Length: 151
Image (spheres, rainbow, N blue to C red):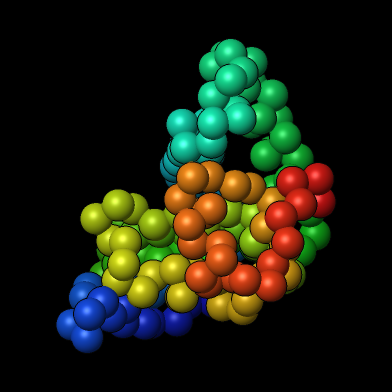
């Protein structure tokens, strides 16, 4: 889909030049899909005390099936920040559906550099996944959004 060159800035200092690439969930290439599933499943489980109460094996089995189904929705979109000269290097990504933010992930070494602004282009009105990190971000960045994991 779209490919837009952008430069993320942190503390007024230009960082690596990145491109934002978009894929509908149904058209996500398998190489990106594997990476996104691994990051989403692992980080959501380890950074959410509620899900950590569940047994690990059933969580991964059933939550992956849930995500597989979610990715097939008509308006489901992945936005990925990649190095402009090497699209195999993914700096971060988001999963949205219209004004719903399902998930946003930025690699730890690329946080606080402005990538989240590039990956979440509009203020979401709904958040469907919550982690300890998102609990801190939510009031500051998305104060009008509601949390609804059942959307």
